[in-house]
Length: 183
Image (cartoon, rainbow, N blue to C red; front, side):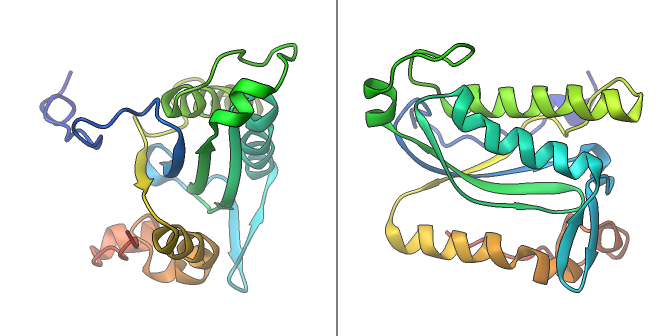
């Protein structure tokens, strides 16, 4: 393990129970921020085959985990943003389906499945092995309606902000300050 990996900052909120029901904003980036999922044309992401795998995997999560709902989502050339709702009512009231988790999932369960399933499918298509995604993911607990509305807007407008996005490889080279994510 390198010093960088060993000293990696924990992004989780101290003392917060991530099994708790609620709204979570997540961002997952491709390893080395490589643009694999499509391209931006006229401020809109046009997904390629890998991008379509990512989109399909994301929306399939709802059938895999009975206790979640999916809210806003966007695919970018090298990352995704989405809102996942861990929903107590859905977990308690829906019957178990084949291949679906029967107990309420945690955010970690959902993200682990998303990253694993999408990586396997993308790596098969790319004829590659090894990680597709960067280690871990960014999550933000959405605590109120105002925050939810701002984050939805941020996700929707993310393709419009690609030129300023900290995940845009052009900006990594130029070291532009990152765009602020609303809280």
